[in-house]
Amino acid sequence: MPSPEQWTRPDPGAGPAATAAQPSPEQVIAGLRATTEGGAELTQLLTPEGERLADSRFDPYLADIDAEALRGLYRDMVLVRRADRESNAMQRQGQLGIWVPLLGQEAAQVGSGRALRPADMAFPSYREHGVAYTRGIDFRDLLGIFRCTDHSGWDPAEYGFHPYTIVIGNQVLNAAGYAMGQKFDGKVGNADDVDNEATIVYFGDGATSQGDVHEGFVWGAVYDAPVVYFCQNNQWAISEPTERQSRLPLYQRARGYGFPGIRVDGNDVLACLAVTRWALDECRHGNGPVLIEAFTYRMDAHTTTDDPTRYRLSDELEAWKLKDPIERVRVHLARAGCAEQDFFDGVDAEADEFAAQLRDFCFNMPDPPPERIFSEVYADTPAALDAQREEYLSYLAGFAGGEH
Ligand SMILES: Cc1ncc(C[n+]2csc(CCOP(=O)(O)OP(=O)(O)O)c2C)c(N)n1
Ligand SMILES: [Mg+2]
Image (tube, rainbow, N blue to C red; front, top):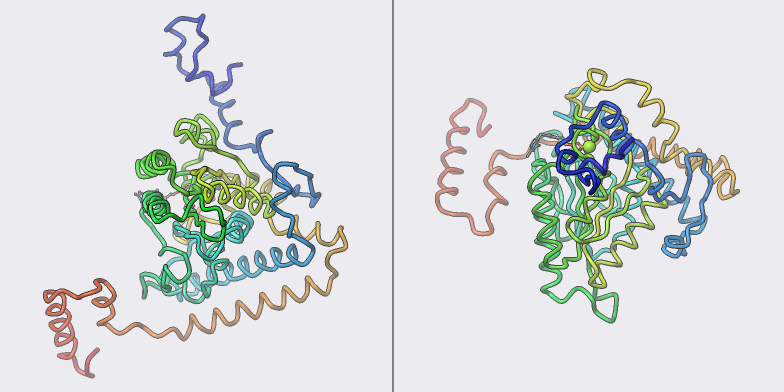
């Protein structure tokens, strides 16, 4: 049976007719293999059973990951998951307008986020709460966006973390441009590596069908920009499965742009950390860009407005539960004698406290003053905007009970 690659690469002896052949149902099913299973090309350092696999290419990037660091990665993922679940619940209780769950993607986000250095820049989409956490952003600062009282809750330059982007794929162009700037500013290829910087941009499998992503790849490639394109292939773009968006595994698309592409087990925090460190290193030394496809699974709904039971079967979810990103680290820590029950209980207690603080903050979050919508838009506010603000405030003042 021809592999999906052969649909676009006809047998030279078969003549032009082969090029036009439609894939048969079997070929379509074979095509699923390309995107729904990790395959031999998957870089994995920690199996779902918690077994550490040796890897001569990527192990050097984990030289500093001792038992304490591993416990730290576990703690990061547990806290992030707990905050995600609490936020999801708060949306259900009417405290947030919407929530975008990251459940199942903790390893992809914590692993890649922990690979970054403070001077690097990250461009998220809207699901990257785990990356935000690794950049030092207070999880509470994310909540205003989802309570619809804020556009962003942090200074992007201070944290090296751009505001969330809802327009699918747009941040890939932003990131390519930012990385070109890093190159023009001499932040790439310096003999002293502390002077080097890189950019990482997060986007989904569905985003790879957007023109902006294609353009972002082209700009990054032709300028040798220090940008890591980090695609979290969580198998779904709302209700559209990946295999309906690509005939090839997504990482293989990099070849067409002339930079390396690699598929990593997105549920393996060690593989995500090592591979992203390698990719960032490549970028900092002038060998960028790099595409990473983190092969993972969105274990919850697309957002709280979505009902995934309408379009996917529960056995798929059950199969992915066995590949849980947190569980495999827990098993590994326990089996390797790197953590006792006390440690796991302590992290759980810390996570409960973290969630309680989040809840308390959310329930008591003040509404921003109405003039806020006019501020922080321009460095120097134009007169027309000043006039609109004054008009709006005097309109509000006309209501009984004062200004608003
Ligand atoms: C330009 C644009 N088109 C459509 C949408 C609506 N939309 C929101 S999320 C989404 C699916 C994105 O899927 P994927 O890139 O796989 O990311 P995921 O949500 O799975 O993390 C779509 C089509 C949008 N936000 N922007
Ligand atoms: Mg997706």
